[in-house]
Amino acid sequence: MRILLAALSLIVLICSAAAAPAELEGTIDAHFASVNALGVNPVDGILYSAGDDGRVRIWDPDTLEMMLEVQACLTGINDIAVSNDGSLVATAGNDGFIQVWDALTADLELAFPAHDGPCNTVTFDVNDEFLYSGGEDGFVRSWEVEGEDDIFILTWEAFTHVNGVNDLLVNSEAEFMFSGGADGSIAFFDTLAGRLENSVQAFENAEVLCLSFAKGEACLMAGGTNGEFRGWDAATGTQTCVVRAHAGDVNTIYSAGGLVVTGGEDGHIRLWNDHGQMVGDLQAHVLGVNAFSVSDDTIFTGGSDYKVRIWGANF
Image 1: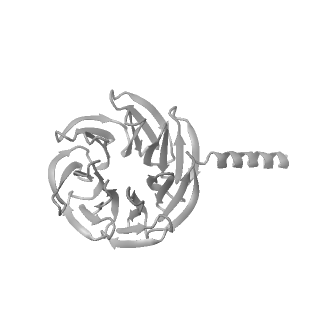
Image 2: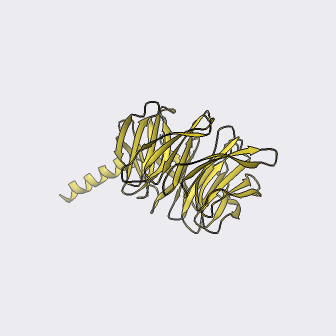
Image 3: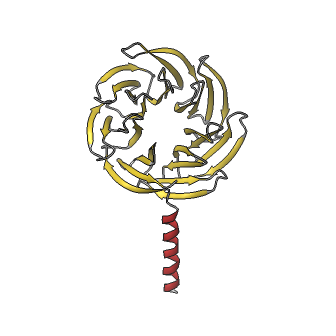
């Protein structure tokens, strides 16, 4: 019996290893508190991390050595956005400020109050012409980048989510945007016209924490505080899947080809096919996975255990 149990344990171990969606390549003791956000410069591959300690740190992706750090906010950083031309990094702070930094030198270019209460999320459009932000005040705001001095001018705003905006997602043509909120709804914006077009209730008794496109931009995916991720046809709004993904919050969601990758409060990264079946599972952090970023075949994860981990993708 002991031999049989040992054999079964070995089989389970082998199957688990084979199902791992990534292989660990390195670990960074990155911050003095939870790592909330990661960004990769699309030009040179430099890695940016930010956390509840209010620091932004810049890492060499090859040596994993810290290149620079700045104390950006005394009360914590919630999100990072890297401009598509690789020149700027924007941070969303618990103090309600957006700060804009030189991506290479970490010199502060501009800081401005964006929200009444914490700024939860920030993202550039594909042309780096607009910066969008969402805050605990429930507003989504659009900031136009103007002039050589990169002045950010408020162009429009919309009150969208009671108790806060948690994530923003802009399409590749910068024509429309989705927001996910603490009220469990997803809002749809015409960014060119600068107006809120529609809103749907995505989760009945949970917050929308994260958003991602899948299958190109044909599907919209959302992760919630109820441990589920759900999918919709982006054109018709028809729900395509409901998947119980994690024990606890689904903090991150990402699409890779025909697969969906989720990171949860349980510390796991999980891989799902388009039928909602789990095809990969990995204990990435001891505590929650809060941030997820991809560069080529390399995955970066940030966790509540204060660490950043670097993985080689198996998908």
